[in-house]
Length: 68
Image (cartoon, rainbow, N blue to C red; front, side, top):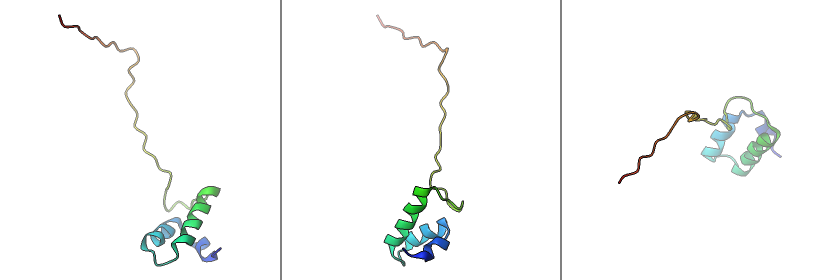
């Protein structure tokens, strides 16, 4: 385990992962370790999800006309 990655922020780790100047395997291990224990320093948000709400159709009437 490389202890130099413990002092890095989440954003620095992701930048290091993209630039591949450092051992990607060690950076990936540290990112997975942080995700498994639920640690986040707030510099990057991995679990941000957009929620789209749909308009409720309760109480509406749909009329389907038949052609003759």
